[in-house]
Amino acid sequence: MAIADQRPTGSPFHAKSTGAEVLAAIDLTGKTAIVTGGYSGIGLETTRALAGRGARVIVPVRDPAKADAALADVTGDVRSVALDLGNLASVRALATTLVEELTQLDLLINNAGIMACPETRLGPGWEAQFATNHLGHMALTLGLMPLLERTPGARVVALASTGHKVSDIRWDDVHFTAQPYDKWQAYGQSKTANALFANALSRRLAPSGGLAFGVHPGGIFTPLQRHLTVEETTMMGWTNADGSPSELAKRGFKTPEQGCSTSLWAATSALLAGKPGVYLEDCEVASPADPASPMARYTGANAHICDDEAAERLWAISLAMLAEG
Image (cartoon, rainbow, N blue to C red; front, side):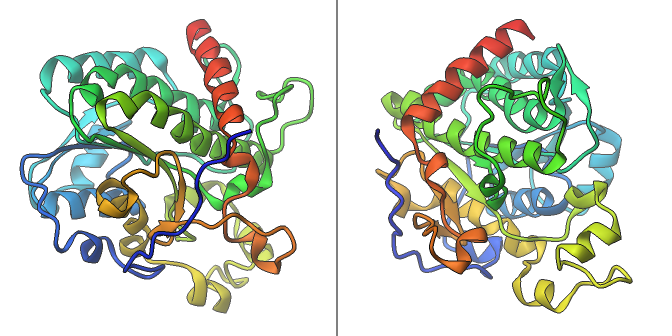
């Protein structure tokens, strides 16, 4: 069983580095980037930082009018395009349009996502978090492969999460058809899927010199938490009973400007050459999680997201699902 090479690189950046700091010495003039959900939360700061260093940034969004309002103060070459990750026809149509329009795609940052939402079914009965966070992004990436393959050194960043620790892939019941739906298990599974997807994709990008990485951005207050009540966030220690940030959150959570930094480091750092498919956190390759450590709940890469065989198994079953959808 091959395991991804989860050895830190000696990165000069850290948990509280900002995206602007990560890109300060990098010129992205002439580069093209796509950032899904790049108009809200850490996605907006990812877009802002890339455009600020000269990249042309395309932002696929469900609501272009809302996105354009959010992006109005972003300086640079930025535009939104319509995309519903939960609708494969929408995903495939956008991919086809972009392949016809663009000559290169240097950076694809699969940033959009949903978390801990009520049970929802998409397509042929797919559980919504797995469908949106993983299958929708996989379909988009596959549709954009002609661009990625003809762009030397292209990079793909899949936004995973420490949520991967909640659940491995539920191989016998991915869509919660046999067991009752659990929103956190579903979220955790989708984040495991994001990390495994990057692992498998890295092998398919290797012939053209491309790389793919799974990224945990850190704890950040963003619209991602919109499905959670104050009671839930208080129980998890994120907020006080009045909804204000707890002392734990003040110490450990990041700002959106800090939360985008690991994605941007993944997209640009020369230190990641020769480290395909690894999982990153805090602007560094995450060390393997030590099950005996009290910090294993919060940091490090659990073994199940570093397993090449599991990544290939997920790739195969996901392709089958997309063929049916």
